[in-house]
Image 1 (spheres, rainbow, N blue to C red):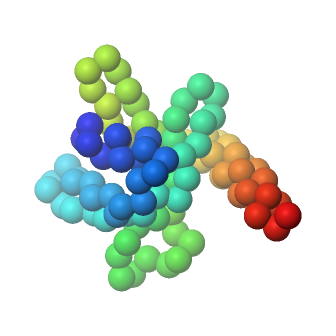
Image 2: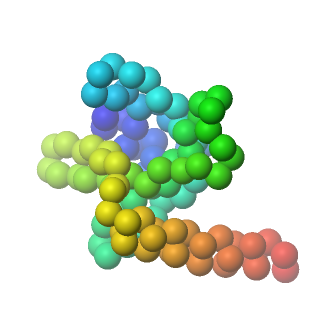
Image 3: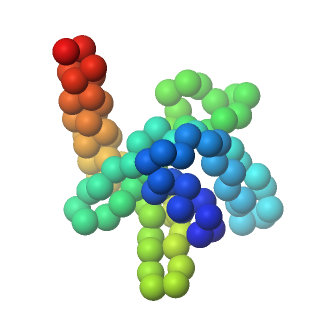
Length: 100
């Protein structure tokens, strides 16, 4: 899991992210954004699967402790909404900058 966290935190990494589930399932994602909310770090990931719509995304909390790091699927709707608010603000700022 450490490698995937390093890839997520690397702003220059644009590789497809492969995450292994609890039952040895393999999931592939592309990273949409890295978000900071209330002193915590979240990532918005888009699943790469045939039955997924282009705007389907998941929010994961990045939990880092001294020697470990893990991704936890966020289920709290308020936190997810706050992550999307921050994402939309960042998107707007980026769009305004690129139009100038």
